Image 1 (cartoon, rainbow, N blue to C red):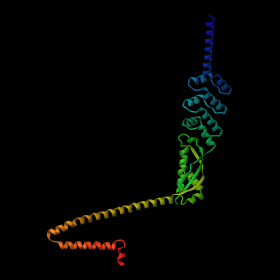
Image 2 (image 1 turned 90 degrees about the horizontal axis):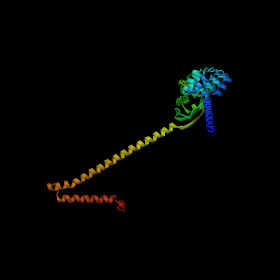
Image 3 (image 1 turned 45 degrees about the vertical axis):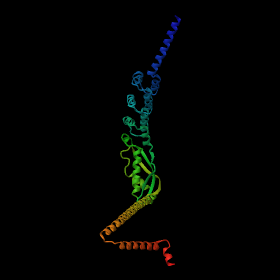
Image 4 (image 1 turned 180 degrees about the horizontal axis):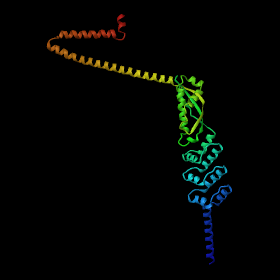
Amino acid sequence: MEDLLGVGSLIVILGAVLFGIVILYFVPVRLWITAIFSGVKLSLFRDLVGMRLRNVPPAAIVRPLITAHKAGIPVEPPLLEAHYLAGGHVQQVVNALISADKANIDLSFERATAIDLAGRDVFEAVQVSVNPKVIETPPISAIAKDGIQVRAIARVTVRANIERLVGGAGEETIIARVGEGIVSTIGSSDTHAMVLENPDNISKTVLSKGLDNGTAFDILSIDIADVDVGENIGAKLQTDQAEADLRVARAKAEERRAAAVASEQEQRANLVAAEAEIPKAMAEAFRQGNLGIMDYYNLRNIEADTEMRTAIGGGPGGGTQQQS
């Protein structure tokens, strides 16, 4: 009997402990006390327990709410809950509102949450709006009219535009537009020396084009940090063109030589074919009586004499031997 009572008491104690843990989980008393002493009025059951039931961590709402209350920013808990359930970052939005308020920047809660839900860091945007950011472009190469390559690096000072953060282009667009402006300005210069002498002309020309239209930033200044002379692209192109022309000329000459060789071989073939017809013609002349035996031997004697004279006159050392 005593064993049954001991087991029953243990079960009661374990049940009480589990019940206490469940109560403490669903009823964050400590967080509620912190909010009360911070001046934030919340209902323990309606607000905090309701957050648990709505699958919203109370700490993710109460702590930003306390921060906003201490900074004098009026924010309603249901709005913070709605932003959390939409996938937003509640603490960053509150920090952005506080930073904007201290910097006298007009930023409403609705716009801050919209910026946050758009995928941008609203707190960083407010900071960039207060403290402008410097974006350095990669080395940008362009060719002046004299064919000399010029490489330039620019530093772009930008300030976030809160009104254009939603839907505005980012840093990549700024870098691309500035690079395009630098290439256009260098390309319109008559000589590379003009670019080296007055690099600030690049900054003035690019800045006057309104490159920040449609972006989330306002361009404050564009400074050329470095400018160097690259290769002589014009001379290189001329050299390449000359080499290409030389290869074309060689190809045409080879074509003409091949045509000449083919023509010579064709003439030799025609000559051989003509020589092959001579015995036939002589035989026909014999049959018709147009050529006699003596005429034939005289012709052979002439051929032999001609071959001998050719051998004597054209042989190695033939002319020298005749003179001696």
